[in-house]
Image (tube, rainbow, N blue to C red):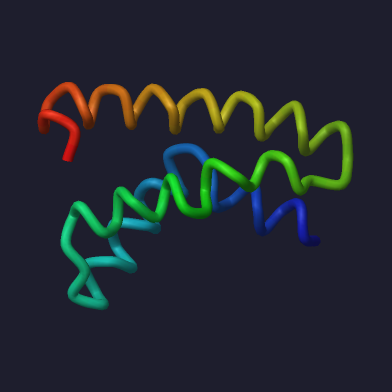
Length: 77
């Protein structure tokens, strides 16, 4: 169950959830993006099963690509 929760926090769903949660709590976009670095990019290392690690690798790569584009479009912040 823990792996499933962590996988949900990664990839496109994780990006959407982070911004929705941040918006609901009055966080800025910059604060929401910082959450990716503070927590989401670290999740892959704490998974328990090989299947989850493979799935997380794909989602982690997607998250990294999103952040690269975000930083390109916003000048890093």
